[in-house]
Image (tube, rainbow, N blue to C red; front, side, top):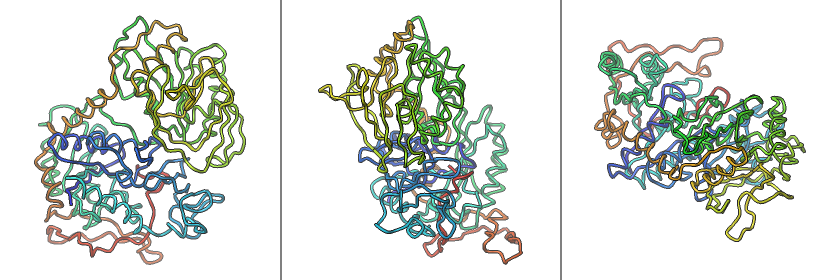
Length: 589
């Protein structure tokens, strides 16, 4: 069995994904065969593996950092939000149903009226006649067993597996049903390093509080801390790190400096930044006389907005997210991106006045590109009895396309040609498009036969995510956009998006190599959970269900002798008996 490590965080966005990718890249450069793993992810940014499985894009990028092919084993459970309270559940790369947070717990009253059950009506993949509640309700052990088996398979075939947690391991309301933080750490006997974002402030309190809110058994796995996004002189921080070690008995195994533009593909599908540029990138000077301005409509439940990263990497291309019609006025290209709620996004565009602005652009011959859900809503009609269950809805009518939502999801990695260039992409959608006209297909095969999408004037649409990462096609497309927009923009002849991504991953590896205690990390990966780690009181409070009726849960008493806790994490530790993923509303990522 290969070695392993779990990277947890004090909060969402503490830097778990980046640190996990950095450790993977550092290890593979040392000749270690390494793989990433995240038991459960909540994300609208997903990817399709070569075997046709859907996983989080963060895990796909971590696989790239480890220089291995991504697989469903690396992210066995993916939750794709459809609202603040419901999510599609993707298990081992395939969708199995749509549930609310409460519905995921199963049992009486666990589902909302009309809600599809896991494996039941509206939820493909279950035995005939079964219901989601009966299959999954209360079976936390079975779900934990599934993710543990995936992790064990990766550990059998790799020297090391670097696991990423979700949110914070100290979310005490979710601990009984946790399978992604301390649940998997204890099941697989993994040491845990907790990452904290010092740029937010309060990192020492976060490290201490995270540890002190865990049970004795969970604390026994917390092996150290890592500070992320530090600015300034590290010697000024060292007294605090020493005091933290005195308080907790655990070392800080790295202080990573603040660096711009190091984020890998983001995974949080519920909070989309409305920043002025993508990845805090510095826009390089254009090769021609003009820059090219790209406006991305920030539709609700935006998915795979990473599609525009390749545009932002081009010198002279300025990418920004917008949510008002006036922000389209000076845009040379407007992109309507993918979304998990096509009908909801369409209504939002109309409410905001963006739908009318898009129609005016099309009438004026100004470029518009729709991707996946964005492509669907640019069409004439949408028949949706699956995602929104809204029935037949009129689209914007900018493309001669009729869309019908199928229960089966399309998950593919196609290859084709467009504008005389090879194009690779990936498809993740329930909508089936019928193209009834248009000037030309968006993407064709080598015989010129239509594979996907269409164009009418200066309006394009495609289901293919990732097509703009194909360098030759991206340059050809930008030339077409510049011509239509009347801009003297010239794409750089040598921009390689794949090479830029590799450079970014190498920078993450450099951060770990230069600013982390790599000897300590190797010991944890190779030797497992250290023994004799002290208990930090008060420990986890009793769960409300465990307290007598009418009484508040008791706070665990502090040990009178302050002795080190050496509690074993043997298999005899009985797992919690209730099942759920993290709560979807306000839950961890």
